[in-house]
Length: 243
Image (cartoon, rainbow, N blue to C red; front, side, top):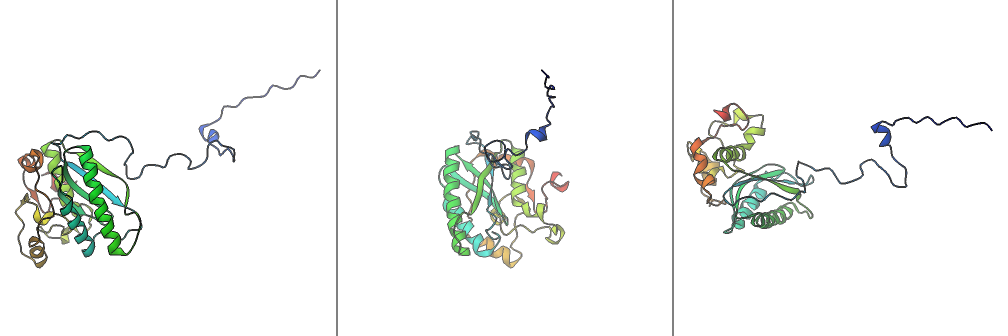
């Protein structure tokens, strides 16, 4: 009886093992849990101490027009002003075209979640009403980072308030005393020098009530000032910002 030739086993490469397996299960391209966008995971968030301010970032979905428009900015300011509670406060903010940066204080993770849920709900309703649309406004989860030292708080304040200088290529055209009118810069008390009412748009902003709340934590009210007031022309991430 003739013996069959022994089958030769070939070790598969990683790419070979990941070829589609047809319609009967197995690996498929793009299968599985969607990749995380913007670096925001769904892991359980670490508990943040109430003495630590937080830098929060929240993005909008792609089909929402730019938030840097007069009527929308008014909606967001009003929503922020209405969001403050004894356990949740927005101390500073900037409105960018597709996301918001905020410096907040919260008594607990639950207080932060409740405060942001109410705030984002007000903003979403106002944005949809302004643009005559329906549906989701904010994408993914918010990103939050605890600020634990005076230096971290100052860096976060500079980043939020001067965020547009960080992104805009026409920095030099803004002028040494320009601040972003779509931020809380008009009401920020830590500028070097203080805001001057030297243009019509600055006078208009300064005449409005501050939508932000006065901070209560030591780090955000006193501690960060140990490293000096913030210049209007400090560009986050540049050598000028580290002087």
